[in-house]
Length: 129
Image (cartoon, rainbow, N blue to C red; front, side, top):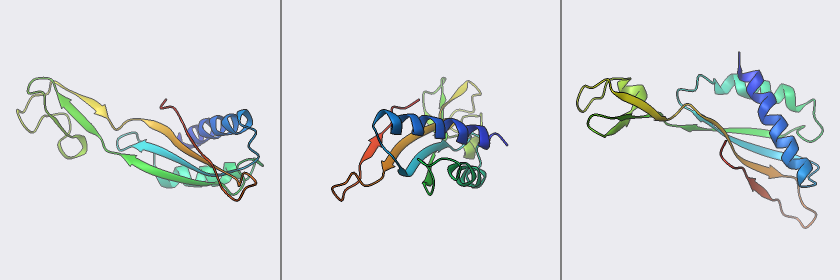
């Protein structure tokens, strides 16, 4: 189960962003997970909930997962196609000269912080890693 390691990495990054911005509590974190990344969202949620209880900044923080579809590019016919549906063989020209364009990544997309004192919350967008 590599989800626990991923959660530790995400939590460390989010906590650092909070500290750098003088934020006392994070309400919500949105991560994007590639469709063929082998990360299982249910395991990620369980690990997140367990780990968040151990951090005052993250306690009660909600994790949301968005899926990034897996897309493969064919170098022979220069077309893209759905990786999960067709695998490594291009459905257009039957070539195996293909590579994954997207769908294997794990990214922190958004961090929503506690009320800033004026009745509003702030969202922090993360650079893609």
